[in-house]
Length: 420
Image 1: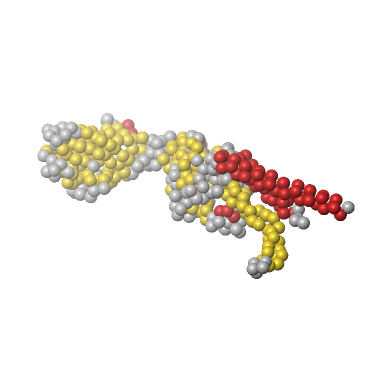
Image 2: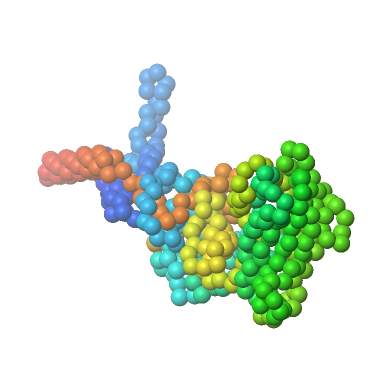
């Protein structure tokens, strides 16, 4: 008589399959959840002998669970508008840590703790590459990513400036045109420079760089900090610049523009005026109205972090109240030789094992690692229709094994009655 263990094994594996399907459906709305499937293998029992043609006669002993696998394909991206949220698309996992224990997750529903650090909903710290002065160091050890709103950015003194200007070639001698530009001293105080151009003849203009006398406590209205002459060729391109007391130069810069004795106590400033941008002079002389198109300089006042965003490469970019944008860090991405070997925990946590191999830490979008969408989360990739179809098949398998079991029971009872 056939063993009861055969249909019982079928009932057990069908029950396991229903558990997997039920878990998938239960996590339909769990961010970062990966759909699981269960695979079965037959259990070989014995060879009963051989048939007349020499083939072995084999009877199986039921079924067993062979493996469970996770579908690591991308879930849909759900835009949340929350700056701390991240959706990872492609290979890899976020690296998180708590009490020195590192784990991995696809659930990017991150938040910010009281210390301004990015964390998971259960308090694990989101790890990444640290940044110093806006520069990320991908060779440094991983550290928590901080977006502390109380963080301040110290002032940086201006060391160079430039202005895109056209001077009207049809101007008469003595005609002046001015370009105002704001620079910052070592204390972050805005200092207002004015560059005044005066036509002195055919294809020549003088320049005078000044700031208000009050900035240095000097008498009068303005204080000149630099002056000289600009010469243009017949095409209106800047040909040379001759600082007062110096010699003509075609290097495209005027260095040594010094501002001393600032009234606010800031350090003395030494500025360079850039007159060339990638081989193109920033000052021209054409038969067109004198105008200043843009001005640039490399200093800024002190500021505080006002907002942040996550770029596709995982760089957390901070925007400061002084208009500066600096990297605060870069979210790390971990990949594994065998991601199916990761051990699953609660809240989407995954732990490395000898089967998965050690984590390979990298950056989003580099070396095959996935990219990140900031202000969004990756939804579960469970397909409702597929799960319902699997549910019907598992239910039919369960009913079939139950029918075999009751039939065997009836046969056994009939045999017992015959013996009696």
